[in-house]
Image (tube, rainbow, N blue to C red; front, side, top):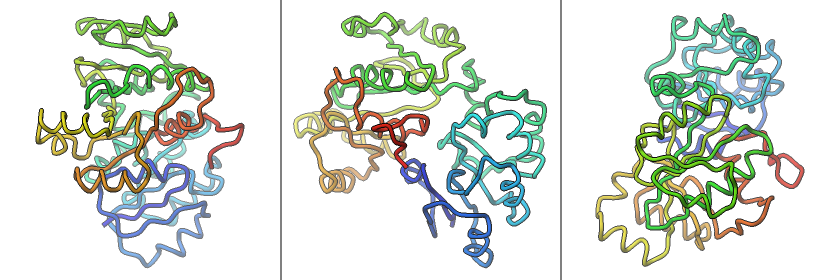
Amino acid sequence: MNVIVANKYQTLIGTLNIDVIKMVTGEFTVQDLVNQFSNFFYNKMIIDITAIKNYENANVMRELSLNFEMDKVILLLDDSPTVNSGNYLSQLVSFGIYNFTRSIDAVPFLIDNPNSYKDVAGYQNLNPGAPMMGMKAKKQEENNVKIEQRVIGFKNVTEHAGATTLIYMLKKHLQEAYKVKALEINSTDFEYFNDNTLESADFMNATFKISNFSDEEVILVDLNDGPETICTEIIYLIEPGIIKLNKLIRHDRKIFEKLKNKKIVLNKSVLNNNDVQDFEYESGSKVFFNIPCLDEKLDNNKKVKEFLIALGFSRLEVDNEKMW
């Protein structure tokens, strides 16, 4: 069984399909964690780095390494420039902290396959400001995708679940703090937004197109019937109306079995929290986020930013204040 120490990324960590014996949330000093877990048996401790007070101070991380068995600790990093600098990551390695990642999808892998020094030795040669390479990044590199990029694919599970418009809104909000591109595959719907920064490609050219976005931190992909393998993560959109759901299930009665452990997002949803719980129970699935019907003309939509922050884009602000 595993323990979780979470703060800003509590929602993100909550999507993990892992056995958890204990979870604490908030900000803690290293000594606070020692007091709570020094006599507590666990398999792995997953720590949201923002749950550690003054985590950008390397000496604090050194203190962590001296008080815990670091082969049992997995650090989920944030995307702050300090934490992702070459100097900071190099110091983590020198402290014996090898299991770190910025990708929530890499955490289950690290539970069963902890890093050795060999896996992270290259960090000690990184130039300042160089991006982090975790387990997920290795997969990205194999797909000829820049290791610092997040290539997020969106796939409509129910018909017309709104991937194209949602990507348009996400890009508008992300570009406040990130270098971002949006790409649609085998479609030309982007042209109706009258935004010449939105790009289209056919199936054959999609990988080449993405490889040309070498300076972008985030690429949002409207997959349509394109290959999921070009993305580092996939979000599956479901519009939870009765007709849409009944059509979906009649078409494929095993659809929710196929979506088990996938990142499901309800879009154009009229469900409240209780309704979402009922949906999860009846479908046997876990909902990552519930997005209501939104006005795509708004340049500043709080719900869009909440969704992006849940995805780990912590540089964004809501109503001029951080969400946490």
